[in-house]
Image 1 (cartoon, one colour):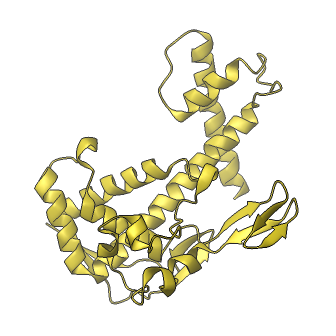
Image 2 (cartoon, helix red, strand yellow):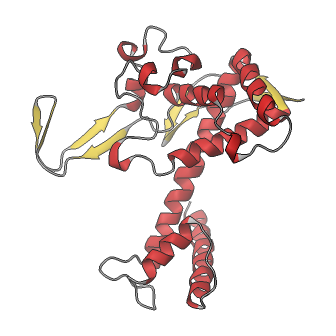
Image 3 (cartoon, one colour):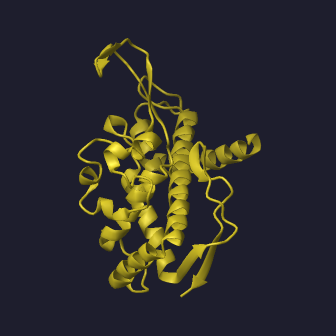
Length: 260
């Protein structure tokens, strides 16, 4: 792990160094996260990359890049894994999703403008409900506040059990443990009985900044998979959701693909 971290930091430091040098020479910057971080940071740091009162050091910029990379890659990968598992278990929904994709794009490369896919969105929401990558949210009181008739002082850690809320039959109904994407046909609020109980990306001012991108990325990948393959669960698959940072299938996801 130390070696991998050292290699990653070396790669990022090289990318950042080249980007900073290009900016100093007045060359056009790219419209991406790193450029926005560095542009907003330049006026707050000195020439050696040392942070001023509001700026970030190069080490802090590297840390931000690592957070975006790991948080964005791991969660979307897990979402796609569970989606393929449940669609392998429920071929009727796989067929409906493929029909929707082919009717919009045929076998052509999916385009951003056409990714408002209702059936696929319902499927992804249901997967996120059943198997949320983040099973627990933690918040800390920054002032004395009252919640549920209890007054909490400053500094109390509060845990929000996302997995429990996503599987609460009082909220979602008696079929709460079933894969039923059509519960989201009329939106999240209707599916959750009008309660604020769907938290795959968190909520409030600290909601996941990559929510829209993650869903877009998942839809694009799933479109391209459905255009090219039919798939089913292999007999060796054992269903065992297991949380290590994110919720994974404990024994892997053995899936049989058939080109179409």
